[in-house]
Every structure is written in structure tokens, then in C-alpha cells.
Image (cartoon, rainbow, N blue to C red):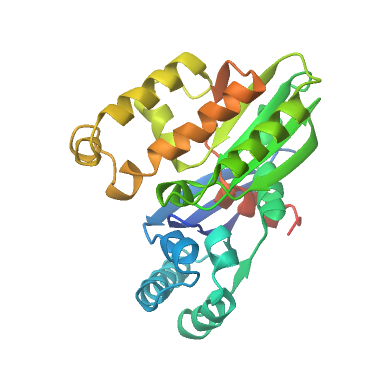
Length: 296
């Protein structure tokens, strides 16, 4: 006997917003299956407001309200039974973040929770990540967002330590990440990885997923440091327009992909990792899993 549950997750990031709808297939004596039913991504760059001016603009509040209204309607059409909506870095830092939450609740009937970097990292870690790890190996998990980057060190299948830094792609684009932050990240990575013999990176986020897709590699194969480095140089050699016209990148991806790759490269350099795996996971996947297993 098969039972199907429909859950949804809304991820309100600094670069874009996502609605993920998942069919959870339950069968007696078997592990539940999480099948993606729909994924909608809307490029509303809240971080541009939050990190430069300190507040979400009227224009983006209106766009966000429309997006959330659409998400609500889509969830109704899909007959979603339960959802959670989480906002990260941009909404955390905008001084009118709480006010925006109230507006969305009233106008779009969506309840948003603003979460900190630690909770964000924990939710992502509750995805299939643990199943993907060889328990006897050490991994540095790097999730690059628009406003912040979360680093989590795994060893023997368990979380050793994790930390969130205010170094995201939108911040880097606006030249808002000072050298001291890079120094802090370098020190944290080197200090926490030095006791381990070999480190492998795991990358999460829209930019590394795009880079991986461009490589044409099979999902379970890693990208090498040499490959990532050469792609970084190649992307830098193209203009913003060429990245859109020649590589087919979305306009809101064509600029942030370069600072994102820079973060992954530095993480590989400072941890001594020679390879990076790119599983298809993110905050929205984590939200659905955490909801199902009662972790949030």
C-alpha cells in the first residue's frame, strides 16, 4: 500500500526565492522516497537592498508579495498539505525584515520565519548529505549563498564544527567583503582541517550546480581543483554579456557565478582539498526533509 504526502518549502535567499514541492512516497518496510514535483525560482535580489541600504525597498516588497501570492496559489493547485518558508541573510539584516514578514503574512497569507546561519547549515545537513558521505572520510561542506557562506566539517559521518560567514556572492559583487573576513575564513578552515589527513569538499548552491552542469560530468563524479580553477579563469575572461549570450546563463546568475567560484576555490586551497562533489541539495530540500522527520 502506497501513501503519498505533499510538502513544500520556500527558500527566501539573498539572490533569489524558490518554491520546492515534493511528493513523499511512503511504503511499508521501505525508506520514504522524496520526489520533486515542482521547483519555481524567482530572481528577486533582496541582498542588493539589505546589504547596501539596510532595508528591503518598496519595489522589492511588492515583487516579493506577488511572488509569495503566486507560491501560495501554486501550493493550493498542487494540494500541498504542509509547508515552511525560511528567509536567510538578506531578511536577517534588513532592519525592516520583520515588517516585511508581517506584510507577506497579511497580503499573501504566507508565514515566513527568519533563520540564522547556524540553523540554515543544520537544515541543509539534514538532507541526503549524510547518506552521500563515506563515513571514514572527512568532508568540508560549503554552501554559498548571496549574503553568507556556511561551512560545515564532517568526519566519520558526524558534524565536527560549523560556522557561517558574511561572505556571499551579492556582498562580494558590491565589494562589501573586507580582507579581514577572508582572513577569518582562511584561519577557520586551516585551524579546523589541519588535524585531518585528507579533505574532500562538498559544494552546495545554485552557482556550483551550474558550474557542475556545464562540466557535463555524471552526478556522482567530482570536479577537480584544476578544473574549477580553469573555469574560474575562463568565466573571468568573458564579459557579463558574453556569459549570458555564449554560455546561456541567466542574467541574475551571470554576475554572481564568479564570486561564488572564488569562494569554493579558496575553500579548496585552504583545506588542501583536490576535489569537490556537487550533490543536488540545498536549503529547500533540507526544509522538506526536516519537516518530514520532525526536526523543525
